[in-house]
Image (tube, rainbow, N blue to C red; front, side, top):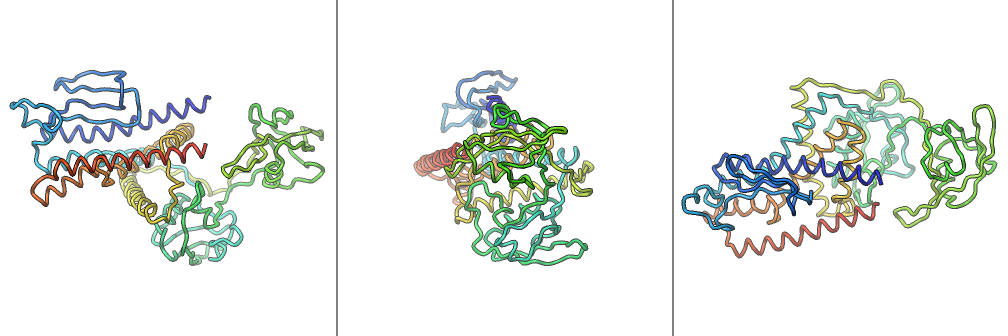
Amino acid sequence: MFDFFWNLGSFILALGILVAIHEYGHFWVARKMGVKVLRFSIGFGKPLLKWHDKYNTEYVIAAIPLGGYVKMLDERVDDVPANQRHLSFNSKSVQARIAIVAAGPMANFLFAIFALAVMYMVGVQSVKPVVGSITEGSRAEQAGIMPSQHIIKIGDDDITTWQDATFALMSNLGEESVEVIVRDKNLQPRVKTLNLEGWKLDQRDVPPLSSLGIVPFRPQATLTIAAVTKDSAAEHANLQVNDTILAVNGETISNWQQLVNLITQSANKSLQFSVKRQDTIQAITVTPKGRIDNNGIEQGFLGVAPVVQQWPDGYVETRHYGPLDSIVRGTKETWRLITLSFDMIGNLITGQVSVKNLSGPVGIAVGAGTSVSYGLVAFLSFLALISVNLGVFNLLPLPVLDGGHLMYYIIELFRKKPVSEKTQEFGFKVGALLLIFLTCFALFNDVSRL
């Protein structure tokens, strides 16, 4: 229950910030263009809090935190007195209307630059992209990529972190192959050709690296227990922190993955554990609880976390940047996120990326809650990513979104006359239906993940 409220609170905080930034973009440019703003609302539905400024603009914080809007004086919607017609949105030039509508997504992109710049100034912890293992029979194995090799370049992109590697691979989705430069144990560069023909992200929640058979290096988990989950099978059996698991049903356990595999296959079955506790060996009966996974298969769950070995020297580093470097890096990273987002939309349309990977409000809430729990840097990174996605999504040419309005105004710019009200109304209905369908589908994906 705590996780639910933590995720909900983080979701409201994150979406509230991003919606406020987006709507403020519309608001600020509208004011600069001489348009009277009647209302600035964060959220929909019943107002929880409202006030007015000296221009008689009403500011509202409403009950449903799933968006917001800026209501402007508009003769198409309201009866506008003759002495205020020059203040209406529809009276402005098409260029001014384009600027007002485009300002929302642009504000999201600018905020992403700001959030990432702050993140770089605070300091970014990164993990050296060293291969831990390669899945047998995978594309990575066929390319000759081997464990312990350090990935330094993918295609035209220099690689310094696993995030760089992931983004570089995703940007090459749909290509026949990509060159991967790795450095071996002797620090010699090796060029590998990774076959990408027919590669798709068609499995839900499977990272690009995993789908190609690349497993990042991570310190090994020991067989000593670091934590025991409350009300778990481990707690009921009286397993304790600092216990070391030696054997199960008389079979010696040599590594953590062997234990995981055994527990997974033993839902609701009694197992005899041999455990070292301080200087004594104890026999403990444990019955892993059964849980249903995403494929509908029951798996055993013990409820313990292992003590993990330390990272080798030089594998983890925290980098700090000065203000100017941080802004430059934030701008470059924002541009990369924008282009990647548009690429992913194209790949969704062509089927290169499965629609199963779409996320909605629940997915955002879980991501927000997790990032907040990891600290300021992770939360800023999350905000930047969602801000870019919000900006890109609003630029889609659906008539109910900013992109749809821009599409109509650009047509008007070239035709020298506005699109007919009948055509616009039809477009808004179709766009609304598509948006509702997309939202419902994303929600379905979120719920099925839970």
